[in-house]
Length: 340
Ligand SMILES: [Zn+2]
Image (cartoon, rainbow, N blue to C red; front, side, top):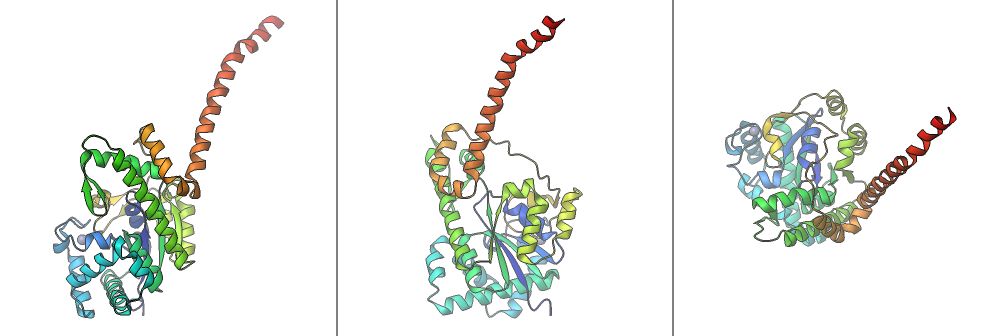
C-alpha cells in the first residue's frame, strides 16, 4: 500500500502569486514532497534543480525518470511533451470537452505514473506540484480522483508591480513569449492585468467542474494568518500540516529539496517564512488605475477592491482626525491655564 496510491496537491494561479513559497511550505509537511513546477521544469533539463545540480544530473530526478520509464509505456521525453502540450491554454477547451478518450487516457496514465514514481523515489505519499497552469488544473480536477487543487490568488496590483519591474528588465513573459518595453509599459500592464483576469476566470471555471476539489487561498491571507490558512488547507486536503504550522510559528528554517522551475528563492536550499513582510514595490498611480479598470470584477469578488477602498478611507480618516486634534489642541490647553 502507500506507494500504490500516490496523491497530489496542485497549485494553480497567475505568475508571482507566491506559488513557489506555498509549494515549499507544503513540501515541508509529513509525507508531502515538493517538486516545483512540473510543466516548466521537466523540459528544461539544463536548468538547475533546487539541490544545486542541473536537472539532468540531479540524482532524485534521474531516479524518478528511471522509475517512470520502468512503469510506463511512454518515454520520459514523450511524457514531458504530452504534459507540456496539455497544460497550454489552447488545450483548455479540448480538455473541457474531453471528446478524445484516447488522449485523456494517455494523459491520465502519464500523470499517474509520474506521481507514483515521485512518490516511490521520495518515500512521500503526496506530491505537491505548483505548475500554476489552469489548463492542467482543469485536467487534474476533471479526470483524476486522487488529488486536490489550490487556486492561489494574489492582489493584481502587487503582481503588476512585479511585472512592471520585469517589463523594464525585458523579462516579462506572457503565453510563453518574452517582451521588453521600448517606450511605454502601458500595453504590457494591460496585457498583464487582462491575463490576471482571464486566468482567474479560468480558475473559477475549474472550481465549477468539480465542487469540493478546488480551494481558493489568498496569498495575502497566507502571509498574514499562515496557521489559519494552513489549517484550512489541511482540512480541505486531509493531509497533516502540523509540522509546517509548527515550523512557521517557531520561525524554523524550511528545507527545499528537489524543486524544478519557479521563483529563485528555491535555489537557496532553505528559507524562513516571514509572514508579515510587505511588498516594497510600489505601482505608479496611473498603472494602478489601469489595473483596477481592467481587473475590477475579480478584485471585487476576491475582496481586494473593498480592502483598497477601506484602506484609502482609513487613511483619509486618520488624516482628518489628526487635523482635528491639531486645531483643537490650543483650545484644550487654554482651559487649564484659564482655570488656574
Ligand atoms: Zn535535485
